[in-house]
Figure 1 (cartoon, rainbow over the protein chains, first blue to last red):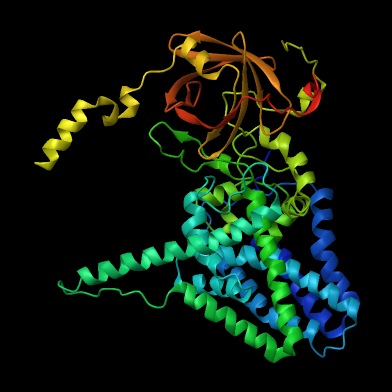
Figure 2: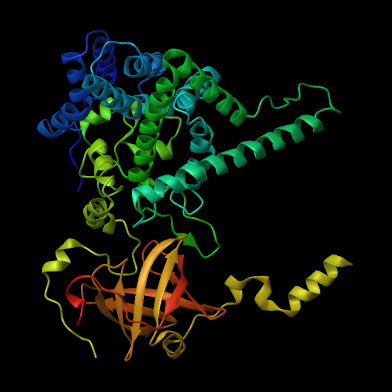
Length: 383
Length: 135
């Protein structure tokens, strides 16, 4: 059974509009407060959900189309985030003339945009082979005090996804808060290990090239040093902008964004595990190891982050070309990604809601729990 | 010299050369003797597979992570052990092995070849959600 997919691909302009529109609303909100802040907040919190629910449709993908403008959109979002963050910190913590309630609205409107839009854009950028694009994506994470994500996501998460070796794959039954602590610590440590190992390898290679002429590429500064220095610079900037309150607000905005990054990791692989064969090797990563969502508006706003199986199969594929696998090939969440993330904040609710959907993707060989069972007569064969 | 010694050592202990080649699956009575009266939790690829309680008379109760318990029976078919459950009458066949007292199963159905390993066991009854509670 497959959902009929319209052949029309989502035009790039739709991605651009959905992703970038909150930015001018936030900007006008900083200047004039009031209605503009409400507009930005409602856009991120309510409009997305309404449009997903009221207009059910699934956008297709452009087969074999080039997307030169897609990278431009990513660069715009990233530069927008790097500009908006200090401005928003000033408006919330500094002498902006906004009322207390307006500052709270701004915090959440901007925080949701950083977590739901800037993060997917930065995520695309760190998968780009061009060094400038990668660095721009990493800079977004550094500004959110989460630079290690640029390393750990590619080197640890993509390699070990849906196995116990990936700190960012949630186990079935694991609540979000426990996961968040484990994933934060695990990805920081494992990302550091991977980068250090890569540097040792590059160094050994450079040294073995000493005898033979030719450019041996010695590794430069450790990426983690760059991440930490960058984050330190961001915090100094926060103090310069708005003193100690500025520092607190910057950290709070960063934590808000980080919690959303971890939430999407949590939801996108929850409970999905690769089987291990008799020779000890894990099953290759396939479509059944990520949760996908079909909802068009949140997908456009999040630059197709919801088409996650295809992203893991083809990490270099630009976001407009990501495909949504049929429902019988890959796990599908019945909720838009932002709703699923909100549900995961209440672990008991999430566990109950996801269970019947997860049951379909359990390995065979034993009965898979299904909600239909509850109504079925139970034969008591107890001794 | 060292490779020769190593070869001699390996030749003398076939089980060490390749456990996959030397292993023989558990027979029905062996499987029964190693499981009956126990409640065993299995992992697959380092994720929870589920928990099964082995009852007298080659009967089982199965549950995933505190879900409803589902009853089933098992029987031998060649060297395989096949399970049939009340909710799904299609038999699911496995090869079972014993590694140092722990059960390991290899699924032999469609897309099989992957394994589950015993991660813990106790003698207590299987915790069940729903109808079976207190039964």
